[in-house]
Length: 381
Image 1: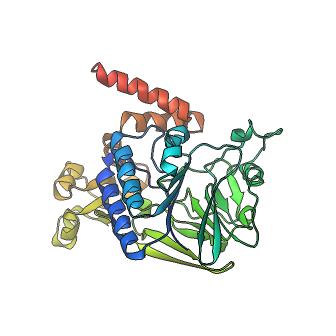
Image 2 (image 1 turned 90 degrees about the horizontal axis):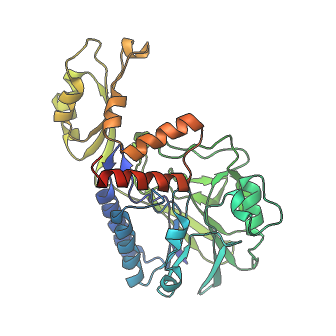
Image 3 (image 1 turned 120 degrees about the vertical axis):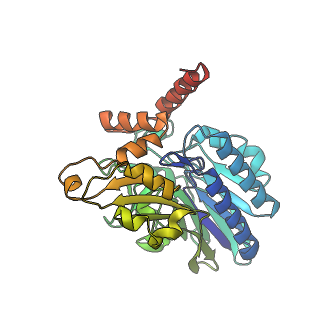
């Protein structure tokens, strides 16, 4: 049985204020085309489907289109919520959609959701565990687990595994392997003191564990426990990564093969570092279109309006900085100014809140802030 493993779509995300929904539409259309060639039995979408708990209309419409394209092809879709998603919103209409082969586990209901598929080798048990915090077990356990690992262990006790048959799990957690942490990018939320870590050994009974949460594709200890990574680059720290769809094939019990199908974006990403004269020369002509750019200017002398000059040459420039003796000794680079111009009020307040309090806003606080901003916009404030 062949599965497309994906995660961290972050539909509705912006790159330093630049809307990416057209990029996301393009990359999902490539996935649909790949499904026509590869003909997987199912697609696994392992959390952070949306970038915000209250997604934009463009993001909702894009997910609707993607799920319909998979459904009309007879491909089963399994979808769980991540830490960015509004779990209850994602759960909406799940009962009706299940009849169309779209299986959604948005809210945690005491244990993983369970669906059984079958092929020539027998049953494949698909278990779906949405993003889990210890407090989410309050209605289902006498004692609240203190750590994320204990919470996941407790939740998985509800999965009665048929050990002689194949078992596959979807999960969205920060998974480590014997103390080794996954390689992360700047586009991901940072772990707070390690409390959210879950060791890969917790998932040892499963034949394949399809993970979401980390944006770089990678295995965690064992080849059967994998992050698919995000389908697009969501920060300049990812500019040299190759994004992909992970293809996992389960044959008879104990037989697993994994490979990756590269995803080429509509608009590439690059980091350029040179003097103003060099940047304006033919050397960098190819970057004048078709790229999102982070540009570092290295001139020692002070130039007039360098950021404006470079933006005329490179319309795709989203980040700008100066690196020379003065900047290294504490001078102002200019990158903060450009980044602020490209960010929404919600982004800026969210960053301010996290710096002041040491933790990001909760879903409830974010929803309240979005309502306030929307009200202000409606009255023209």
